[in-house]
Structures are given as structure tokens and as C-alpha cells.
Image (cartoon, rainbow, N blue to C red; front, side):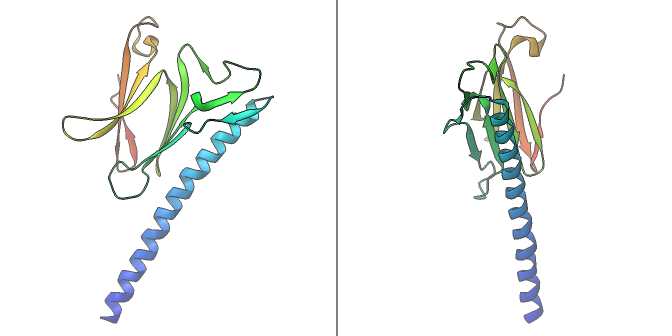
Length: 151
């Protein structure tokens, strides 16, 4: 019984360390991206309260996704430093993956099959159309990876 108990404790320590390292990795990436955004600003940089959002996609009480939306960045003296007609850069950070791109808006939605996905509204050029043409992309998270259909 003592051997089994030691094994179970060792498993908790190993997996607890991995989860802690993954959260630390996501926070390191987030901190670096915010620092880079601040460094680009020659005036007073501000980070809006809604610029960073954290999500638990699999309901295990651990964050699976951190979203940094540069629409929440502001730089004194520059109205369009972080956003343009194609939208703003949005960064998706998971414990094992990272992606970023220009989006006009984004939201987390639940599909008819009860899967949570990220829906992006994009500039029409992303769909090889005029800028005003509605264009969308969807990304799901599977085992920490960001998964999307590729054209």
C-alpha cells in the first residue's frame, strides 16, 4: 500500500508540475507580447481591462486558452498603432500552441454538438474577396492545439 501511495503522490507531483509549467509558459508568452506592444509605443501605453481573457474550454478548472486582443492596447498620440481596416491583432495562447492574426471581432460560441469554438470575423481579403465581404473563420482547441480548416 505504501508503494502505491508513493506512486500516486509522484504522479500528482509530475502532473502538477506540468500544469504549473504550462500556465507559466502561457503567462510568459502573454507578458512578452504585452511588453512588445508597450515597447512599440513612444508615448504613454495603456492596457485595457478587456484586452486579456482566459478560458477553460474543457471544464477542468484550468485555463486552456488565453486571448490577447490588441484592440485593448492604446498608445498616446497614435489612434491606429495596433488596429487598422483589417481589424486588430488577436493572439491565441494555449499551453502547447500559439497563433495570431488580424480579426475584426471574435467570440466564443457553442456549436450544436456542444463544442466551444472561437469564431472570427475577418476582412474580406482573408477569403479572397473585397474587404467589405463578410468572411469568417472558426478555430477549435483539441489537446491544447489550435485546429482550423485550411483552404
